[in-house]
Length: 310
Ligand SMILES: Cc1ncc(COP(=O)(O)O)c(C=O)c1O
Image (cartoon, rainbow, N blue to C red; front, side):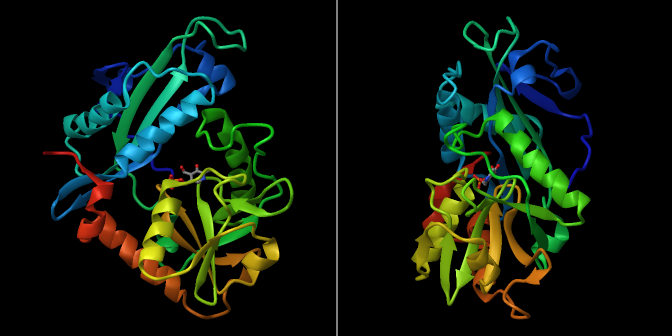
């Protein structure tokens, strides 16, 4: 996953394109010291019909809602950011890439209250393959329940994709890797299943899909919402409800969803094999459908794809 950057290309930075290496911040920006920034992770796919950004509007909209939670006013309209994202891909001549827009309180003072700090914005794009490795694409990954609980809505606005929130994800990820697992699963502060460090989670039992409700301690993912809609359209029942560890461990199948991870089957949790030796049939069917959508092969869902080159 952690491929290094090549240092090539252009980054959109406060409305202008700068060389990749020149897209710098001052060491005293507010966002660096206190994590006071918001960001998005978006993907652009190369298809037979051209390059498309998956659910661009929804991602940009979530970035604005993330910012509102911190009283941050992004000094561009949603439409301007959407167009800047398209333009950044075009300027870099890419047909498939990961897209990272970020807005953060900038350089002015270091009082905790960010009032008075400018809001700086940047958009970077680069090629990024399978986030959880080829294992995730193939047989599924080995996970562990994290000793770190997912941040609670009473302490932080968990629906905001804010920079500082990710310290919680970093701790869970470091712990999982140190103990030899590919990914962590975080419980909420009450002990119910929440999500992965950067993914939502689904379980399948007797052909029904289960996932923690959007109102719980999760970031309500855009992939999650897409999978729910696709699965329902395909005739599956999808139930959004609290999930216990036991329910997840006794599921027939389990998988992660996320922009970076896409759909990643979970093979084991703390050495318990999910669903015994059975193959994850429902996961495979949904994954196939999801990739058909991403590859512009499903007319009905073309509304989710924003063209880059028109
Ligand atoms: C904590 C967390 N949960 C879930 C997700 C999945 O969200 P999405 O499908 O919108 O990428 C992400 C990724 O953005 C995340 O960081």
